Image 1 (tube, rainbow, N blue to C red):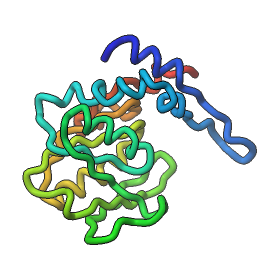
Image 2 (image 1 turned 90 degrees about the horizontal axis):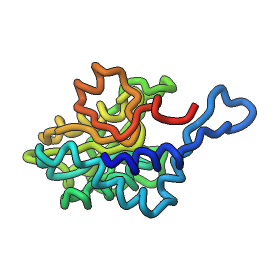
Image 3 (image 1 turned 45 degrees about the vertical axis):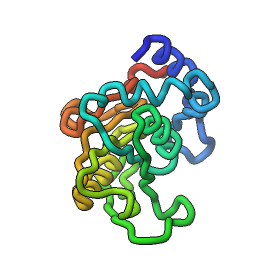
Image 4 (image 1 turned 180 degrees about the vertical axis):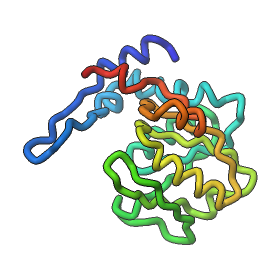
Length: 183
């Protein structure tokens, strides 16, 4: 990854206090989306480590994945498939394959669904997301891939906060770690 992109991602990132009743700060990645040079560089930078494994499709979970996934897919010259969550609005019509994540960093289990007609045998799937901390959603997408006969080839993320064993197991390549971000 170009050093300029890494530097710019850090500069544009913020921690935000959501207010009374919150026990922790939340990440604000909106600066990444607002800066045109950063936005243009994200797709190519995310997919660079995976070009040799020749993904045929990018799958990303709602909601920021719906922005990053198409950027990555365009950089690879492949299609994009959305992994929907029931609470994120209207679900797509037609048959869906569902999986439930293990507990995430908040202890929640997240349900994800992919349209059956968009993922199947022979697909080599690159999962793309902005932040992977527990890899719970990544595991759910990998399960959907397995159920549909597709092969997950790895995960590209802007930030990877997983333990090294999880990063290696799930073939996660990231542009940053939480240690790179301002305190």
